[in-house]
Length: 322
Image 1: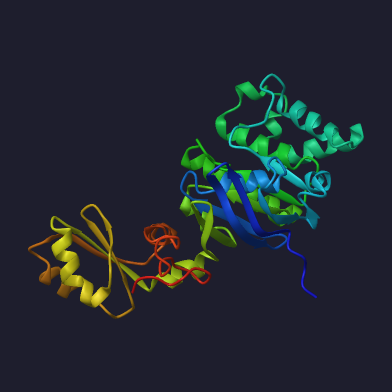
Image 2: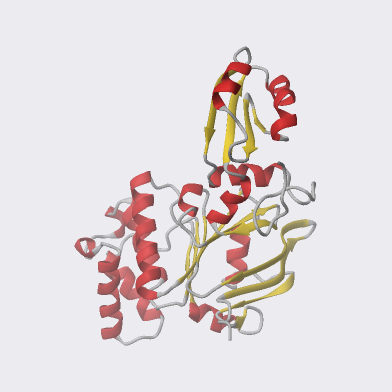
């Protein structure tokens, strides 16, 4: 018997008058999974989290979180989730420990349980030395770690995170992701987050791309990257139209970014030395490399399914290009 999904949506939608924020989202996230929603601003990522957390009421469709219907059992949903917003929900005048004890007290636990849980969370997130420091004196990375700790103070089964590393430098972003990894491994928490940092999403179990309120592709990072092909041929040229016309019969339609052309290439289908000689009059640089999630992001947004049904990449998106 299969394990019920931690999060399940069927045709979930949200509109504001004529403006469609989310258009019929079908999503299933397994318990204990690390899942990322990716997409441009306005693609529906934050709206999805707000609906799942019962902060918004859907215009249509249904959703279940930890087995509870977001419409008929919103209080049960809230008992099973933690929410981390883009802006930390912390009292800057209270210490790290005081913030966690305050959050824990709201869950109805006794004082001893709250105190022990707060101490354990400070240790889990590497904040023990900052326990008596006011939040206003903490670094941005420490505040974000503390805010995530606040979000799980009541031991939720599911944690929703909206851009958890926004505004942080590379070192602090890496630390936050290490904390999230420990959180899943040590507490078995299901993690659903949004992020603009594609290199971070590569560490998730599954990722889903959204565009204009619709899901346009999803899969594991390895599946999505593998669907692009074995290599990406990158050509920098002063005459992109002419170069694209020359290479299109062999490599298909390129992705054009100014004077940079990207082609999806099967293994053994290209000789870099031969191409360098062939395009010496037009190309400033030619590179053959392995694809990554950044390439998936570019290709999957080049031809959104709304406009071009053949567009998209990935096991659960249509296969586009060559």
